[in-house]
Structures are given as C-alpha cells and as structure tokens.
Length: 452
Ligand code: GDP
Image (tube, rainbow, N blue to C red; front, side, top):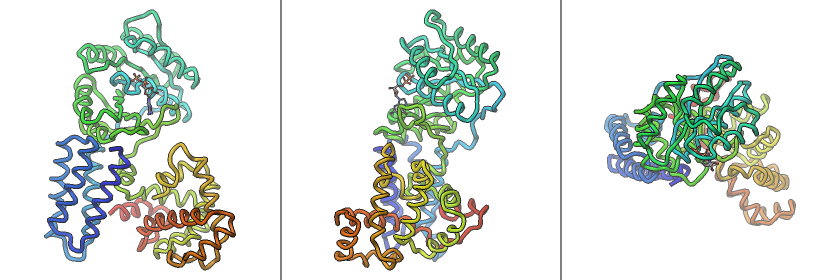
C-alpha cells in the first residue's frame, strides 16, 4: 500500500466513524482496528502499531468526554499525535552551519539510493549558498566513483575519489582533509553498501567514521523495503551513530510505512525524502504537515501561510470571511486558480492547499494540470454571476451545463468534470467553516485549532 493509499484508508475509517450517530466503545474499536490494518498493510512495524492503538485508547476515554465534545476530532487528534510521535524522535538532528566545515557521512545498503542522495543533498545546499564537496569512499561497488563523479560534474560540485586506491578509510580521510583545506563547509562522504547487512560493511563504516569524525551520519533507506526496515535501521544504528534518516524512492509504489518504523528504530528524524531520480527531486521532510496530509486533514498551517503568500493582501480578509461562513463558491475557486497561475511554480503552492495536490495536479504533470485549470477557467467565464456566487451545486442543472459548454466551446462532460472538482474542493474547504479569522501572526494558533 503506498502512503497515499494509507492516508485514504485512515481518512475513510475516520469518516465512517463520524457517520455513526453515537460514537461508543464499539465504534471506536472498529475505527482503530481499521486504522491498525491499514498501518500494518503499509509495513509499519507491528509493535509500533500495537503501542499506538493502546496509547490512543488510553487518551480517548469515551466516558470521560463531556457531552458536547466533538469526539471525532478528539480521536483524530489522538491519531495525529501518535503518528507524529512515531515520526518525531523529539530531538532535532545536527544542523551544519554555513561557513564552518562539517563532515556528513552517508550510510545505507547498496541500491538504497545513497550515491544519488549524496549529490541531491549537496546540490540542495549549494543552491542555498553553501560550498559542498563530495568524497567517494565506496571502493566496493565497481562504478561507484564514476557515478559520483558524473553527478558531481553535472552539478558543478568538487569531488574526490580514486580508481587505484582500494582502502576506503584512506580515501575518506584524504578527501575530508583536502576539502577542509579548500574551505568547503559541507564535506559529504559516500560510503560503501552491501546487498545485505554484513559484518564487513559495519566494520568498514566504523573505520571510516573513526578516520573522518563526521558531525552527522545520515542513514539512507529505500522506502520499499517494507517490514525489514526496523531491523535494518536498528542494525545500522548499533554500528555507527546515525543522527538522521533520508528515505528515498517515495515517488514509487513503495509501502512507506517502513519509513515510519525506521525512524522509531534509529530515534533520529527523517530530514529529507527522495521523490525521483533527478537531482532536484528531493524535499525537506516535516513531520506535522506530512501526517496532516496523510490523514487527509490538509496542511493547515502551511495553508494559512500560503493564503498570505498567494492571495493578494486586499483579498485576504474577504476570502477568509467567506470561508469561515462555509461559502466556498465557484468564484472563490476561480480567484484561487487566478492567484495560483500568477504565482508559479504551481507545484509548490498546490501541494500546500488542501485538496489541490494529488487529484488536481499529479506530480510531474504540472503542464497538463495548468492546461486543465485554464480550461476550467474558460468554462467558468461562461457562467452567470448567480452561478459563480452560489455555493449550492444543485443550481447547476442540465440546461445550465449545456449552456456553459456551448458558451465555452467545451463538452458537457468537461463541464461536469469541472463541477465535480468544485464539489470535491468545496467539501475539503468546508472545514474552514466556523473558523476564527486570524490576524497575521496568529497562524500557529489557528493551525492548532484546525488540527484539533
Ligand atoms: P546506492 O547503491 O545506494 O549508492 O544507490 P544509487 O544512488 O546508485 O541508486 C540506486 C537506484 O535508485 C538508481 O537507479 C537511482 O537513480 C535510483 N534512485 C535513487 N533515489 C531515488 C528516488 O528518490 N526515486 C527514484 N525513483 N529512484 C531513485
């Protein structure tokens, strides 16, 4: 089960529960069992899931909840907190400082994406004004140095390695020393992997760490390894002091739950995720927005920030006022499309706005999505003011749809598709109803409110 499916299953379980007239022990148990099943199918380690279930039951004491409390919200909040707890070890990883040499050592099994990730990490920091350098201490895999060299050359990042020297410890030490002299502030050491966790691999890692004294050891893990993740991560942690995790191949059909388990095993935070083979397919990982999206709650804190960023200042109070009244009209959708198209790159903005990301704009298909939005807007141009300002979808009967299709030169089927999209978004955005309209600077209070 890929993470998006996991998110879907969890949201469905919560939805089913909220459909129940009375939420009692039985309903809560059914919901938790459903969520447990989804997490296990996604390869989250059994013990973690069991602990999570026990904790939620401890927190959510139905008898203690005073009448009138929103039980669904309380349960959703408990699940949110528990998932965050699994993913957040509570201590941040070492953060390198610009201008001061830091050594970052990458470890992981062969094929996990270690070499690719080293370059992505270097490239990410280079764009932010760092002076990174790459050292290839992988003498085990034939072609590893060539691969690193090729990537580094493409990104114009200095690199060090050798075709002749077979001692990885020596190469690592020499490379680090050289780049320290050259005033590089982020010296990245790519180490060997093996197909399996072997004693020789761990011994080599220990020696490289001894020789280079890394400020941070990053464990790179392929998100598709499933239930094996916990044990693998723990084995690495026991051999070398892992301080952070990067999970790769989150774009694939991986069961991402292994990643959650790995964090628990290393007690280190996930700092980035790899979302493709290309150098820039690399994202900073933040626990709360990730879990919010997983639970279909939308990233409300990011969303409010984006409203301030995307929506022109003079439109903000009116938009928030309308949303708080539960009025997500077609005109609002139109205006947000306008704002988003003006902003570009739309991918980043979209992924923040609840509901706008996965369905309306699949990753890697930004151009098509942009065309789709423009098409929707052309159709909305053929609508009357009454249609645009109504939040009642029933208003849109067949003859109106045919008129809009004719007016915009599109098929009725396309008008229907656009209206379906509107309904979907309106449902998600209806969560803003009853919202206390925040002033700028009150965003965090709001996001707590929304997530509650
Ligand atoms: P290493 O043996 O751990 O150094 O692994 P490599 O860096 O050589 O990566 C193994 C394969 O995984 C290569 O084909 C990479 O292009 C691919 N890869 C690495 N990261 C990602 C990712 O985030 N997404 C996808 N789809 N492929 C990746």
